[in-house]
Image (cartoon, rainbow, N blue to C red; front, top):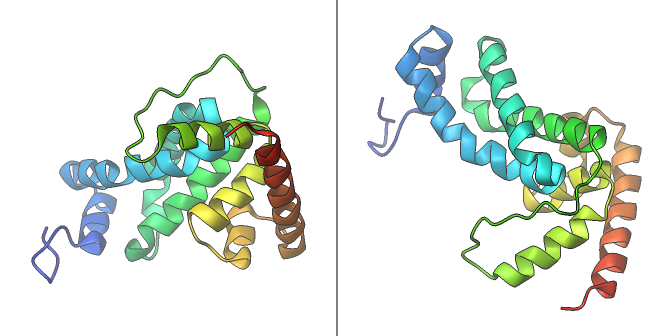
Length: 173
């Protein structure tokens, strides 16, 4: 299914086809979502990111029929992924021996330093930082995704930024 511009799939039509039970359309939707869901889960769930992403994808498949605005697929999936990542991160203790050996096209040393600093923050702080600064969402959207009051998001964001800066200052760069 090609979009009106002739480039790439028409996301709305693809999602509607998947909702009607078209297995090929569902496979294509999942193929589009998997890398994105993984990127949302990674900085929140850390070493449990693959498990969180898998659970998020299962929830997406199970609930795809409930998505009323197919064009909002990525925002809807982001909310599911963030909640799953927080759930996994709060359920398990960090395992310091876990190493992320995925290549980073930018600066792998910087990526490792950032990950080390993020590991020191509580999962709720990682979630608000990721959604606000990586995903670029405003505080109200973060509150909706995490199902938290706006004031709670603002205070967590303040504490998360402070904790990140403090931990970053203690890091040898």
